[in-house]
Image 1 (cartoon, one colour):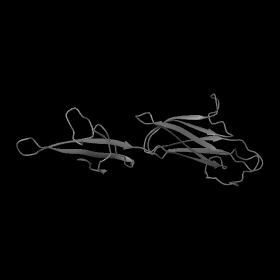
Image 2 (cartoon, rainbow, N blue to C red):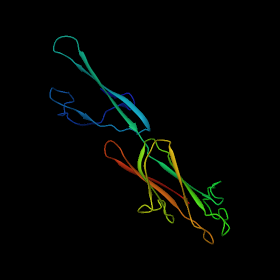
Image 3 (tube, rainbow, N blue to C red):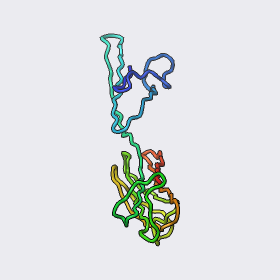
Image 4 (cartoon, rainbow, N blue to C red):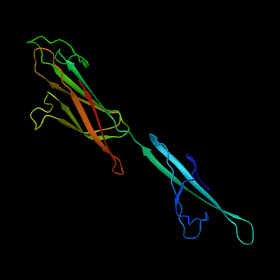
Length: 193
């Protein structure tokens, strides 16, 4: 009898038996079971019990158990883009037009980018981009790469833009790829106007 303390009885024998349903010397029976992956620490214990009945004497039980553990993770990231029209004193989250008005000849618009790790694992090499702004100034390219961001951590930076007539809309994006210890990868991203 094979039992898992979380999943219950395991009955799906997929290979190893020669058809007599007796676990003989040299046989290895392989069972298969599936469950629902969970976020965070997951621990379970498989236990097997068999009974041997000798030709003479009382039956004897044989048991063994083996634990299994993993950590379910969820990488995730958020970007918020805000704008200031008063020289950086106040910032507003102007996701929808029209946003604040800025009179010609006064201040430059200043854009604040806030990147937050909203997942359960540290992220590395987060690439921040904007469809209209050069985020890194004199450096090559126009993106910024954040080397790493711990769980729950945020980083922010500002970039000055140029005044322009009419409605101004631009979009910031962030992207990172997380790879687990088995080589499974997931790309996470977010965008904000």
